[in-house]
Length: 227
Image 1: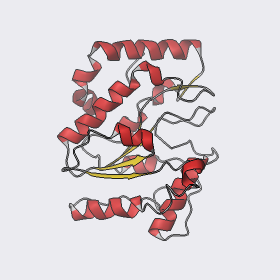
Image 2 (image 1 turned 135 degrees about the vertical axis):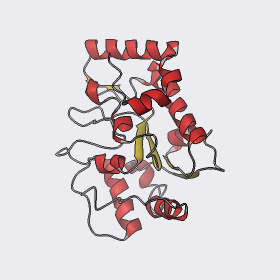
Image 3 (image 1 turned 60 degrees about the vertical axis):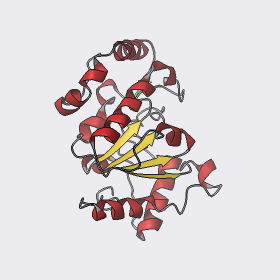
Image 4 (image 1 turned 90 degrees about the vertical axis):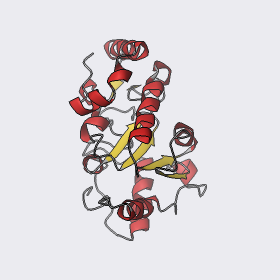
């Protein structure tokens, strides 16, 4: 399988993608796509990286794995293709975003490419999944790769905001250098977590922009660019 990573990320991750485990991972993913229906489409597996260059990263959002329904996953965590019904977790993300930023303009599309193009790395822990089988590729060592990505961002950059939603993301972010970066944690936006009072009111969107501005960085246009 061709590793469809842009040249900048290939350079940043060169030592990682040359390791034996990564070669084994790519072979396993290739075999999965040959023998099963998997998402996202092969050419979109590394979309999170190709929409958001390493130099441009301002925010990292960590998801678990891609949506497993037909036509949903586009390589960006929590994001779906234009025309796809907005999933419940993403709808709750938008609700919190609108409440936090005090706007009535609720997005009509769940495609988050506009966030990615502004420097939001929308990174799933596993970059692939079998159709209708959530977490089916968690054994493929994607976690080793994405842990390394997070570590490189933590080590090589400053003033990045990491948004960790849910216990899975909290564990994924344990090694982030919190002296150099802002780490915001809350419950997961899934209906079960959100309805238990662990999601709404976290104000992560306004807190992110305040931190970016305080460090001389352009804030994210969360709403205007998404709708």
